Structures are given as C-alpha cells and as structure tokens.
Amino acid sequence: MGWSDWIYANEPVIRLLFSIGIFAAVAVGEFYSPCRKLSVSKGLRWANNMGLVLLNSFVLYFLFPATAVGAAMLAQQQDWGVLNYYDLPDVPAVVIAVIALDFVIYLQHVMVHAIPVLWRLHRVHHADLDYDVTTGLRFHPLEIVLSMLIKIAAVSLLGPPVVAVVIFEVLLNATAMFNHGNIHLPEKIDQVLRLFIVTPDMHRVHHSVQAPLTNSNFGFNLPWWDRLFGTYVAQPPEGHTAMQIGLEGMRDPRQVERLPGMLMLPFVRTLGEYTINRRW
Image 1 (tube, helix red, strand yellow):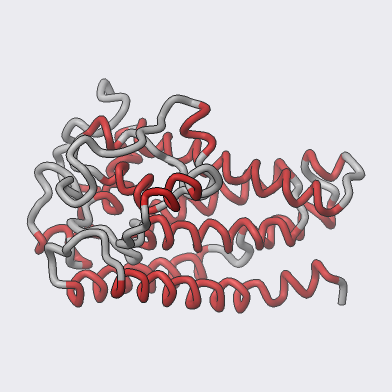
Image 2 (cartoon, helix red, strand yellow; image 1 turned 90 degrees about the vertical axis):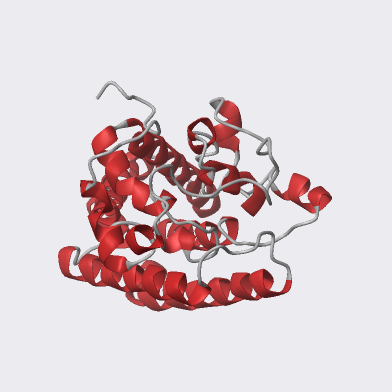
C-alpha cells in the first residue's frame, strides 16, 4: 500500500483524532481563560449544537461515498487537475494546494453572505447567542452538503496530493474550533498570531450582531485574504466583552438554540440587513 493509499484509508480516523484533541484543548482553554460570560445555558447549547454535528455527519455519510479526499485520490489516479500537469516536488505541491483550497473556502464564505438564499442557510451558524468552540461546528445540513460539493469541485479542478487535502481538512476543522473559542488571549500574543492564523478575537468580530461587522473577517484559517480584499476589521468598536453576538430579530433561545428551531431557520421569512446583496 502506497502512502496516498494509507492516508486515504485512514483519513476518517486521522480527522476524528485531531478533532477530538483540538475540541478538548479549546474547551479546556474556555474553562480556564474565558473571554466572555455566556448568556445561555452551556448544557442547552452544547447538546443542541453537537446534535446538529451528529446529524450533519450522518447526512454526509449517506450522501457522499467519496469526500474531498476521495476526489483527490480519483484525480491523482486519472491525472485530473492543474497540479497534475506539473511535476512539482511534494512539499511545494502540498503548500500550494492547502493555500488554494483555503482561498476557495474564503470565497465560499463571502458567497453565502452575498446570496440571500445561501445566507438563509448560513445564518444558522450566526444565530448562536453565544460564541464558543461548538459554534465553529454549527452549520445547517444543507450548507454542509453545499460546502462538500464545492470542495469536491475545487479538488477535482486543482488535482492536489491526497495528503494535502487531508492536511487542509484537518486544519479547517481545527481552526474553526480554535477561532470560535471563547478564549482570552493576551493582546500581544493575539497580534502576532493573527499575522499567520485567524484568532478568536479576529473572527469574533464576524459574529457581531451589527451587519457591517458580520460582513467582515471571513477567513477561517489564513488571515491574509481579508487584508488583501479589504474585508478585515481589527476590533469591534464596543470591545469584545460588550459586543452582542448573534442576529437581530433572532434572540429567542427556543428558536435559535434548539435543534428543531435551527433546522427551520432557513425558512423564516425575514432576511434582515445582513446579506451583502440585499436586492435579491
């Protein structure tokens, strides 16, 4: 069995072990050094947010026999994709692929804020009344399906090494939990970290109830795209402890913090002022 075959065969276990480890590390950080006081019962939110994660896992399992990693294996076998046309050494090919896929996720994130029908799905993520590690995993099943289709298409066009896609998926999941962590980082450490990775303080701005701030800081892993495309906001005007998390008009925990309500959020009529392109 070759290296790519081994990675492909063990990808679910690799991702699961990293996910559990990062989740535990962030949860411990939230316990010992929280940034904000929670406004809703942690037990209620965690039970329902993690229930949504389990539902999404079942949906992906039944709908996608081959994930993005499977698409990378197929592209490698069939010589599909841009990177398969060039004889690059392994390390540069992996670095290019991870950066390119991260840029795709940035564009996807902007897209779900710009197109109202997609914002209806994505607002499940933003409607959380608090901000912690489970928020980073809270997405509507239809958005999860859309995201997987986009990743499979991007991988097929790019033709990255299998190991690059595994690294990318692990990083995306890990940084989503880290930058949604309710963790207080000293300002000097945060300022250095956000040169290389999206930090909790950087991404928390994106979850402000204020629409202009919601449409900023779209990056999940690499922070460079927001600075490059003018969507970067350094800090919320009112500060991180005073800023309000969530969405206007969706403040009832029975609607936004319980699994049945979360699943129905895309079908609530009001869009508010959050979509970038409000003419739709």
